[in-house]
Structures are given as structure tokens and as C-alpha cells.
Amino acid sequence: MRHSLHFTAMLIVAALIAGAFWAARTTAQSATPPNGADGAKAEMLTLVERNDHTTDVDVGDSGPSAGDVRVWGPNPLYDETNSDDTGATTQGSCVALDASFSCVLVETIVFSDGSTLQFQGVELGGATPSVRTIVGGSGAYLGATGIAEVAPTDDFSLWTRTIEIIRS
Image (cartoon, helix red, strand yellow):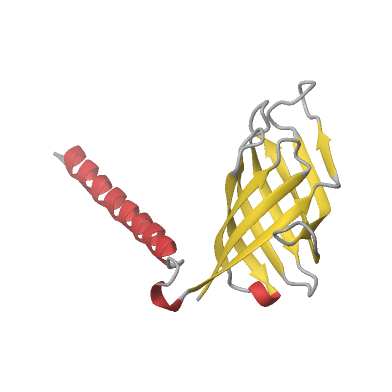
């Protein structure tokens, strides 16, 4: 009987802890309202990266493999027509998950006025579009959230970022 009460008490405590985590997760998800909800305003920005500076660091097994690191930047960012230099640059790093170089990335865009946008996400290997999450910003982008869809050309010389910035 005593073990039964102890087990029941442990289940109740576990349920309370799980409920607290669920509430925190739900609150975090609702902190970023969808476009137009709760007065949030979305700004669309398209930037084209010219991939001038990229270095791959081969770690472990020779050739592309999990754990290798790709570092880029600063690479210039142009407008959506790829004709006017915006004065912004992108730089970041990506740790490979597999031989196709699907990787976990962190990226920072620095704008000409010093404002920044920071991104995290998983970039898919090959010339496959992927989506990144805005995890922060500074200056004109302080408090920004949103996403960026990033699509490379087949030769990886250009990377087009279509960014949806949400501000409350």
C-alpha cells in the first residue's frame, strides 16, 4: 500500500511538471502572432547573396561527412533583381548532419545602418530550398520574428532569401 501511494504521488508530480512545460511551450508559440493578428505587421524583403566567400572545414572522415563545417561571408547582398548592392552582408556557419551537407546553421545579416537579423535552421543538402527562423535582431529589426525561405542556384553561386519579418 505504501509503495502504491508513493507511485501515485510521483505520477501526480510528473503530470504537474509536464503540464507546466506544455503551458510554457504553448505560450512561446503564441508569442509570435501570425501576419495581421494582434496588430502584427509583416514586411517582405528579398535579398540575393553573391556567394563570394565560402570555406569548408573537413573534420573527421575525408570528404563531406557529418561534423564538417561550412563558413561563409561576409558575402554581399543585392536587391531582388540582383543588380543593386544593398550594402548588407551575410555571414554564418553550418555544421553538416550528413554527407549531402544538410546542416544546422546560424546566420547573421548585417545591414548598412548596423542593424542585424539573426537566423537559425536546417539547410537541406544540394540545391534544395530551405526555411530558416528569425531568432532575433537589432537596430531597425529589434524584436523581429519571422522566417526566411532560402533558395540556392544549382551552382551555389547565388542564394535568394525571401524574408518575412513580423513586428508587433
